[in-house]
Image (tube, rainbow, N blue to C red):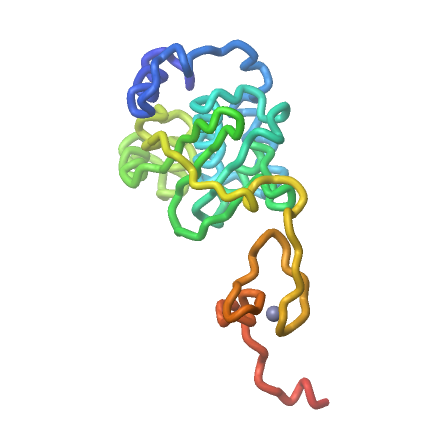
Length: 230
Ligand SMILES: [Zn+2]
Ligand SMILES: [Zn+2]
């Protein structure tokens, strides 16, 4: 149902690829089915929801388009950039096997339901973005269901990929320090003394500063409160 030839042809057109490039299913066995991923996602994430269905299908499509049929066997060759920190993100991590802790999952905070999948050996990358009009299509498919949540949950499982996603081939501007593996450098901040891995220091006036000390922090010391004094 999800891999009809017509559908794949559409995807190939968007992605600017020839059909045989993405319709080569040799070694496709490593990828689980949507149903299997849904079951796994429910136990990992705690519930099943439209975002997870989208995330699973987004990742399955993205991996297929960059020629990764068995994510488990491609752990070191795959990078995933997620642009939102919502339910879909957990599902994308599940399907790709990419994790923050192994530096193979990158969170870029764009607030967009989109992700980019990069094959590190071939440098082939596709960005898959959920279409905004998918909600309307879901509503039209299941008008009898009471809530948009239920409409989307059902519809996103069966809608063709071309109705769910826009796909573009992209080039990822990857810095050496963004690659998975051990950090390539470590320096101490000249102000607070904390260690900074992987070139994240800010250099100014001959000093190396961590981002918070350079004024780019997401936090600041709290003013002294009654708690601190007690
Ligand atoms: Zn959820
Ligand atoms: Zn510092």
